[in-house]
Length: 90
Image (cartoon, rainbow, N blue to C red):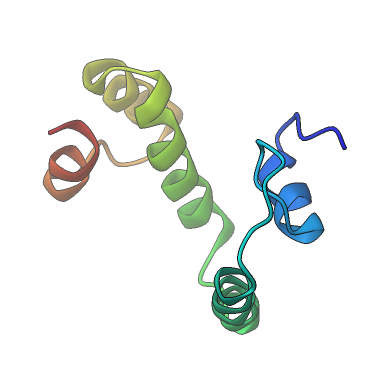
């Protein structure tokens, strides 16, 4: 099975296998699905807030702190918050 692309993790979880082909233990799958079902049922507060959260979480893996902060500000969002800097960059 091909586990590439942006939805590779979701495909692998659905298939019950890690990206290396090893099976994911059933208790791990059960807990993951239980938590994700609860998350899927949660009311959302706004698309732009969710977009920013995703950008910070993923962008911190690919962009240095100064670049990500500048890009957020230039796009019209708040810059990185101290707790985000502490969590993602320290």
